[in-house]
Image (cartoon, rainbow, N blue to C red):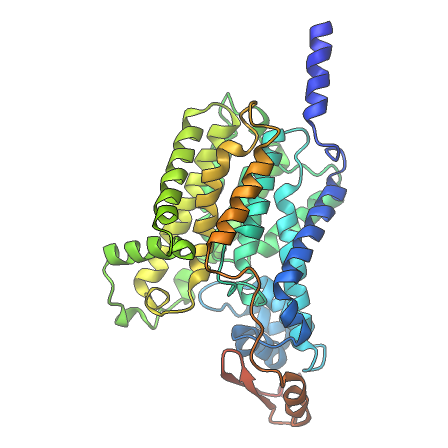
Length: 429
């Protein structure tokens, strides 16, 4: 009995103090993510402006079509969150519409990232893995083109879908289950990676039936949630098959091998000035994957799922870029396609620090944070998104709104240097 009591006491000491307060923990993580995102985009909060599809597609169609715009797929898949943000922004003035979209974008990203550390009871390894993904989501270098743009919020939101396969969420109340299901449903209908992750969700369901799955066994609620995400991913896949047409496919000039090689170059592009880091990171990721697959219990399952997620993401991007290689050939832009593969590679590198090893368990989080900070410092990509060059947005937006008449109005400059003509709704709409 004394030995059993000592073991129970040790387990209690290893359990985080907020293990029994999942809502407080979720809100704390979401606030941290929101503060970090605000720091990255504060210049855009100073003078909020539209960017590309935020106005050209979502805001314009929200004005012209109203609620019918929700039934319009764009680029081959559904955009539930951008449609929601644009619909809300259309209720404000043109001057405040970009700010409304930006605030909804920042809030949705932070709430999605908070799901990464929603502690599943006392499953410490899953919590450590979620914390690792959370740190990577904030600190892995990216060119900032995925920020301050609700159309690109899908890349942050997709991490919540990844967490659905890695973390065993189990809300205690019916309201918690409903909110989690609703949030993940909106996310799945906002990113094409929901279709790419269909096999990942299937693999997770299969792993939960293995005799040694332990704390990774899924409850009936979690199984139904993953099956729902598979269904929504299938909807995205069918939508792409029926509606997507790649106009640039005819001009594709890269061979499959060349496409793959350039993809690998873009993944390690933040450290292109350091040959050592560019070569060491993929090797370290392979070593981390091999370590996890040779381990037992949760580490093995995490390695399988992270490796599968990386493979599925790379395959999806490869198919996309094989038909339209422009993001691989232009000197700037396109880094958004490679941020999640980069994040997964670094996560695999740091997986041995996620708390599995008892020797490094007290220091794993601090070591992972130090490594991420060093990788960020060694990259050539800024942590903060540069401000738009147009300082005259408020005056011009008011002028554009004053010209609103029965024929609509034109916004003369939509970043990056585009023009948007928004037609007035038909009479009676």
